[in-house]
Image (cartoon, rainbow, N blue to C red):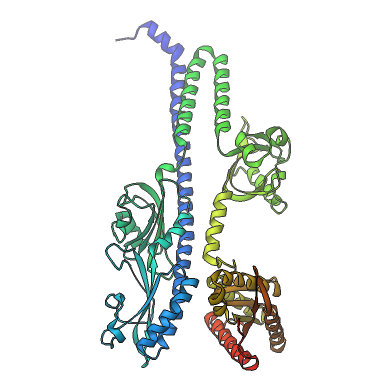
Length: 611
């Protein structure tokens, strides 16, 4: 049956327009879907990077806390091993309890226990840890989480073996580390209301979590985890990422995990998948609205041609300007010469420059002097048609201070496809960078004196040995111990002792070269690391002996601590090194022994000082 002539005329008149509108609708839908999908993938990758970075920083903080407790545990092992009898052993441990509580406040209780078959100490006291430990070996044993009573606080037990008179492992010295000490580290994380950070043992027993699940702290020790975590740990035991609903609360998160270096524990950080991309629901609606408006205007253009096409362009421009104006990220554009041509409200809030003051000015004024070559490199890449996506840099605020920002730059093209400028999207990440720096400081610096701790000192010492090997120059380690510091603490209290340690740290920093490292190992023990002492042994030895005398002089005399004037004196031991033949820990031990020899010599010559 042949179609009617009117239908043929209608199709001839409007068919091409209808087909064009339909093709345009399909194309816009595909482009919108592709654009949204690509942005979601990019946001997801950013979320993975953030969770991994947070997990690494949290792992370092946890390792630092455990390392401080373990360092004092080793000191107690030496004391217990030197005891002549069980009563003497207990007396030594009791005497050291107060000092350990001051220098390692994260540990609440220290105790020693014997192995099976060993005679009990006087009074028949058997610590609770005796039945729960394996046969003594040589390594650190971490047990838990456990608690002494059903209603008591949860804790981890760190144990190390001690040697008896025969040189064989005879028992253990243990330290209890309450789980609430980890809460200080976890509270520093900004994970949002649905984010979660978890610490588990190697067997996946729950140690700490922020926030706690509905079961609260009663979930401690639970091994309930998602299948995805078990599979990820089996595939990559040290570190990795995965997406899964958390077994404890059922929230779908983007997760990253990291093994705690040197300890049988794993850190897990998760950010809710619903937050990425955050705020994209409105943008989805805007893009779909724009696509629908474009299709509608294309249909109207089939009737009114030029007028309809003009309306479509104007509507698209308004939609774009609305998106730019409502964005929380700074959005700006510039010419190929680097002249600013647009500047949204978020850019005004972030950088402090009003639009009328920055438009027409060079973008270069936002870059610090040492970063201005970066602007030339960016413009060169834009000219090649590249998009410079998600890199971190520093830009200047209108008042002169620096801002850490994450920047994405894309080329801007005209109707003929020629590159005529560049667009920039910048997000202020100053707070995030400050948090990362704070976590790094917690992991590598002493909280009282802000000096490098043992971990950072060992890293710098290994680097100094490599430098010594390459440059064929000598370096030195100086071990410093304050005289009669315990008597000062006992007489005036820990606050005065802390003031003394801060004063000593300041004097040591003032007495050494800027390139030298001053570190605090703990208690009243400090270390100075010197490099580039020359190629000649005698010259290097003379230099370090002179420095040791200078340090001893800097730490002699009275210290004004509030209203008190207290005498100060120190013993100094030194150890030269050349190249990488010596072990870093061995260098510290040798310097420590030299310090004790110096202390004995000074006490013999001058008599004991009294506070």
